[in-house]
Image (cartoon, rainbow, N blue to C red; front, top):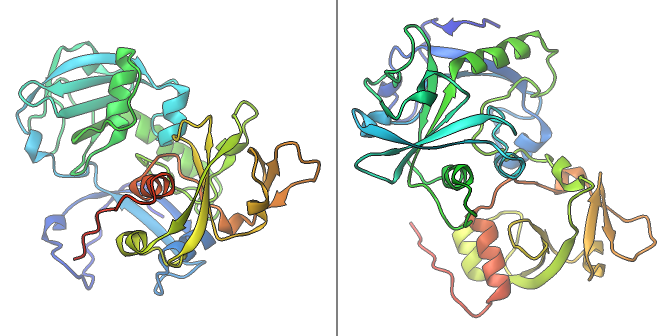
Length: 336
């Protein structure tokens, strides 16, 4: 598999408008094999389990023209803490990574987080000067990756409050988020990946903003994690079914929610009545087992293909929690 820029001309059969990708140069990122979790989740009949694939990526992502020529003021500097690293799972900015936050001088909704100490760390102002998104204060020839998002991110809001030393409110988001990574660090990761043995998906290390990999539940079994305490029981009603169309859950299905320290920031949701419903007390996890507090039994076996761990909160989980706590309040459903 080539490790340089992908330059081979290829004429595929496309759907949709692909004109934006005309003559675009792509950097080889990784190769892998479709595993069971991906096959079950996405049900792509043309790429079943075992299908080999490769990923190429443009040096930048998103439409950054909205911030073209906007001066940004440095807001604060910080280091990625353990909590942020666990919550968002950004593999290109693990715990201990230095970063700085800039905000738009005319629009404070624009936040840019730059990871790793580079030339821009000592600048009070930065500006994106062209559509290749290179930041003008970099030394000549120094490349970087910039990612602009068209949707809100909690990640940026959390990084900002953390570097200011403030307590983060989980309802806060950044409406115009931008993430910037030192290209030197990305190249180090590519070199490490190229020398590694190829296993099913092990080389596909894309710098995800949030790590939503299934079966990625090792964070649950840390010895210093508090147990999950029972919060509520709910019924998967018609509004939830219409809004999320979860094909694994039928309307009127019972579900139960536990939370760590009752903060509702770490929650455990189980659908359908099973052995787990016998556990009405606190629960803890170890490998593929769930343990009821004060129960001498070995525990309840968990099938690995039936548990999905996310390192971030999302709307589906919040609505399930809201419906469980306030069952008589309506959830807004928009069909279209």
